[in-house]
Length: 131
Image (cartoon, rainbow, N blue to C red; front, top):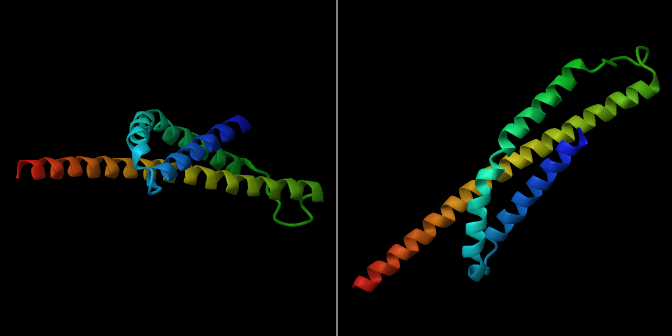
C-alpha cells in the first residue's frame, strides 16, 4: 500500500507547485502557458478525488479491524508500540488526503478566477479600443 501514498504525495506536491506558480506575482509572461497547462491537467487530477475516498475507506477499515490495546496488561510492549505507530501513520495519511483534496480545490478555483480576470481584462481592452 505504500505506492498509493507515494502517488498521492507526488500529486499533492504537483498541485501545490502549480498553485504557487499561478499565484506568484511577477510571472505574467509565463502565466498564459501555466494557465493552459493547469487547465489541461485539471481533468486528469480529478481522479485524485475517488482515489482519496478509496484511501480514506482503507484507513477506516484498518481503524475498525485493528487490535485494541487499552491497558498495558492486554498487550506486550512491542504490540503496544506497533499499535501506536499504526495510529500515527493513519493520522499522517489522513492529513495527506485532506491536503491533496484542498490543493485540488484551490487549484481549480484559482485557475477559474484567473481565466475570468483575463476575460474581463480583454473585454475592458476591447471597450477602451471602441471609445
